[in-house]
Image (spheres, rainbow, N blue to C red):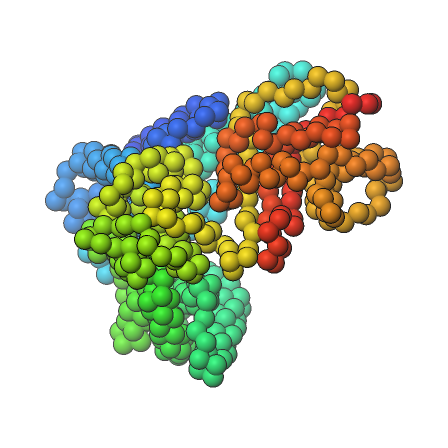
Length: 600
């Protein structure tokens, strides 16, 4: 077999660039931005949003390029329009991301990313009835992605070994950042370039292709079909349990139901070219049976979401579950009654639904916000805290359950929508509370406490199961804080230590543990000998006083994370803990940091 020459590889790469210049330029721009970000210690969220926009721009501009290669777009829209159109859409996303003030904008971003990626699958098949070509086009794209991923891993591993040899054998200094930048280049330049070089060109040949890969059939028939069948059997058993006990399922069952349904739908798509082949009549029967059997489970899912929404309001995740379930119902009904079904409708309708729900008053953001706002107003009114269209201070004690619900509602809005959207409900200025959320994704408790303070209502963490529950916490020390090591002779760095009762020390090596008894203290084991260090109780009390809500706290002053005693000084870099049952003091603790000893 004749191997391709270097000239052939260069020509192939050049042809890929000439065919797909925009996605490759966008990917290279993302690579350069990430190279620069590797050397930055304080990452501004604005740069992350720019990086995410560029990452989304790769599939978006790829789809637009495919659209311009075939009618009707190739005839009606000049080729020069597609590149600027892609950059315009990226600019719109970037502006909206910058204007999205909530710390958690990941859901909003994925609402744009999903349709951009799915659009790739059918961008070249607008206005065409070439379902066979459509199937083979996507089969080759998936195969090419897997092959490109393998090439990328080998490329990265091989060049990494070269850098390692230069460093260890020849004494050439290779900084750790070089490996990170190499991986970024492999993922953002090498992989997309290799992938795009293999995108099919002859769409007519794809439609005429009568082959059906045996590996695909074996994968679908002997792996996916049994898995989907087992999943549905378990879900039907669970449905029977619900009908008997009248206890509706928790949230994770909803995701299992949709995942099993999607797995079955993917299986049907993989079987599509073999539906009408001789000896494969069972495929059509299985497809119809699967679609029919999925409908009661999706009905169970919709009823369970309705019950939870009626109690806790609608969130983005519940909104997406409802939309996904309704879309699946529509697809399964289409496969049941359409003969034969056009499989292009699967990605096309999914893309359309994802795009439609990404914005507007019917979108996930607005619908979930209105639901949570109504829930909050209802809780305030129930407790006499809603007067003349504004929240007022509680005139009586608010129950623990209602305090928890109010806290959860404010936490959610603060994290996913921004507290300033609730300003019309409050007389007090919410900006100081909203400012506490800047750069603190996932840590909304401080901001919520500030909002609830003027209302005379104490904050309750979402994970608290009863009024007697203690608080979970996760502390990280402020970056760059100096350590006072005067008077100490030996330094130990520990990554994690584990809580528990006194246990014999290991006969070899060093180990840092935390032991619980009448007090909580550090113990250092050195070569089988144990030494009890400083108690942690006073330090934990200081931290609890500083951060009464617990939760995740960053930029904690080093002096609050330091304790001394018994010839030791422990300077924590991170500290995590939580209650056990209804105990108010931490029962489990782990962390990392530096331990100093006065003697060697």
